[in-house]
Length: 170
Length: 170
DNA sequence: CTTGGAAAGTCAACAAGGCTGACATAAACT
DNA sequence: AGTTTATGTCAGCCTTGTTGACTTTCCAAG
Image 1 (tube, chains in turn red, purple, blue, yellow):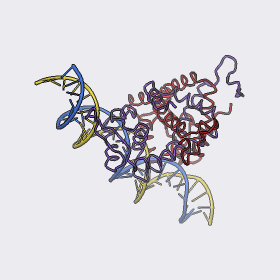
Image 2: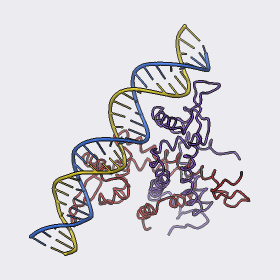
Image 3: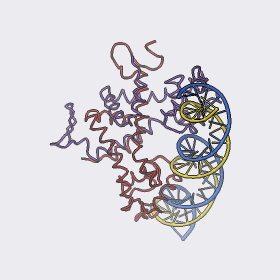
Image 4: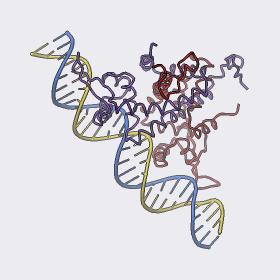
C-alpha cells in the first residue's frame, strides 16, 4: 500500500520523499494554520476600528502603489467593482483614502492614503510585520528563501506577475 | 545585489537584509497571493457542487481524524458551534458525513465521512495536492523545508499544536 | 461632430459564512 | 439532586462576496 494510485509519489528509496500525499497534506495544513496566524494580529486592530480584512487589503495596496486606479486595484484584489466600491466608499467617507480625479483621463480615480489612512496602514502592517519578522528570524534566511520560492510557485501566473511587480529593484 | 548564495546568510555588514521592512512586505504579499492560488482549485469544485470553503475545511479534518467530535473540530477550525453546525448539518443531510452517537459518552457525536463524503474529499484534496505537488517539485526539497519552517513559526502556539498533532509518526 | 465603448459609480437583491445571545436536551460528573 | 458539559437550534446581525441593470463621464475613432 506504499504507493497510492495516481498520486505520483515515489515512496521507494529516498527520492522525492517530500512529494508523498502525506507530505502534501502537511503542506496544505501548514498553509491553513499559518494563514490564520498571518491575519490574526491585523484582524484585532481592524475589529477595534470597525473595519474588516477587505479594508486592510485595499489600504495595503493603495499604500504600496500610491495613485493606483480603481481598475488596477480591482485586478490585484480579484473582487468585483461593487464589492471594492463599498469598501472604498467607507474609506473615503472616513477620510482614510483620497480619490483624485485623473488629470489625463478624468474618468479614472487615483487613490491615495491620507495621513489618517497612512496611520492605519502603519498600525496594521506593523502588527503583521512583527509576526513575519519573528517567523523569519526563527526560521533563518535559507528557510525564508524556500518559503518564498514555494509560495511563488503556488500562485496563479497572473498573481505571480502582480507579486513580482511589487518587488523593488534593489 | 544581496548575497543569495548557498552559504545562506543574506547579509550586508551587520544588517540582516532578509528582515528589512521591504522583505517583510514581500513575505506578506507572498502569503496573500499564494493563498489565493492555494484555494482556487478546490473552490471551483466546491462551487460546482454548491458548497463553500467551510464545507471543505470540515470534510478535510473529518477525513484526517475520523471519529473526531464536534468540539474537537470546533477548536481546530476556530469558529463558533453555530457556524460549524450549519455546515455540518448540510453535510449530514446530504449524506456526506455521518454523526455517530458516542459509546462511552453518549453526548458526543463522532464524525465520519460516508463513501460519498470520501469521494468529495478526494476530489478536493487531489486538486489542492496537484498544485502543491507542482509547487514543491519546482521549488525543491530544501525550499519545502524552509516553507514549512516559516509557516510553522507563523502559527499561533495552539494552532501549531494542532498542526503537529496531524503529523503521522511513521 | 457624433458615437461607441471604457471607466467609474450606484442601486437592488441575494448568499455564504462569520458572529452573539438565548434556550433546549441529554448525559455525565460531583 | 444539582451542576457542568456536549450538542443542537432559533433568531438576528454583520461583512464581504456575487449578479444584473442602469447612469454618468469622457476619451477616441470614424
